[in-house]
Length: 423
Ligand code: SAH
Ligand code: SF4
Ligand code: F3S
Image (cartoon, rainbow, N blue to C red; front, top):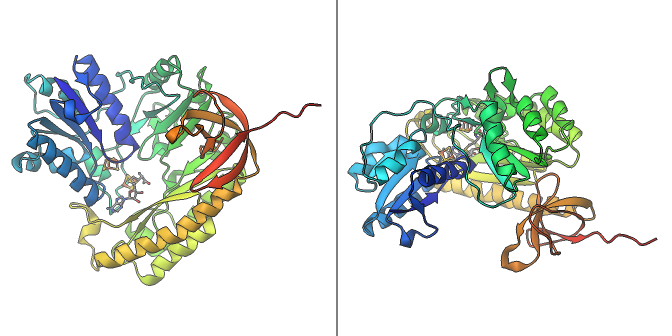
């Protein structure tokens, strides 16, 4: 039985794909790199927007058409469940807490219907993918119930991985060459286990011997406090990278979204970050066309993009998700208008993103080399703030190279090794 894993959606799903790889390996099932050579396919699906569901369903149908066994796992598996089996899209459906059943399903063994409540998979060792950077889910689920979002329904309530388990996983990969550790969760700032909170975890992980860089994703702006930001400034390994999803800059819309911060709270948090980390790389998520978003609300979001000067933004048009509160709100914006607003924010942010890229030019940086660049043109490397650059130099992944950022080409910042002056 050869199995192919296909991933959709967010970083949590990418991390889950590693869990599934581990479960396959432990279950004696071969994982293949190409779906053509597979007898079975596991899809780690996403339901956050309609488009993500449509793509996964299309792929599942094609795979079933080719006679492969199809397991639709992950968020859509949990939310759409049996409906997908009835429609002939999947042979099996499993939620994000049920991956342990996969090897048994593939071997046609007896599989119970019980859902393992609130998994953390913390006993599983990660898989070594040979890289120098690795991600670890430190918590799963979400309690925030933003009114547009399916994640709390798909992934269930928040639960955190015990530190000892995380340490074991991190050490396992550090021994295999990983130097950069990313701590993942839908809202990592809500980490809570025993009396440890998020800042404690960042400190502890950073102190593990061999960990040279520590980053994290995603932070809910409401949960970002001043004191932990200050504590983080004392962690030399910490990447100066903050992803703080704003969604909208209208207090009315933020209220309807149940984000529980105002635009002035958000500004305050951005100021803390910028004052503490002047070289911070700041990114955000923007959602346009939420029900009731007027032209004026939308303009506030455009203005905020210009004011906050984000390095990058992930931008989305609102997609109605069954079961969420927002679906039942009056005045759903017409689809065309949502798309028009989306193209307008993209246009504005693209200019900002380009200009922000230029601001790094001229700096000297100790770059962290991560992988060969596409088309063998130098190496991909990262600044202290996680911004990626192309280094015109031969170096090995995991090396640190003193370099000068010399220019921008397309979307990429280009770096040259700093030449030591001979005295
Ligand atoms: N936990 C993260 C977000 C996870 S989903 C957070 O709170 O920031 C990633 C992004 O998808 C969200 O930030 C939001 O911008 C977008 N998104 C979520 N639901 C959506 C929907 N129904 N339609 C369009 N975009 C959505
Ligand atoms: Fe969704 Fe909000 Fe939870 Fe993020 S915080 S996953 S947007 S409900
Ligand atoms: Fe999608 Fe599930 Fe992530 S819905 S965004 S894959 S948590």
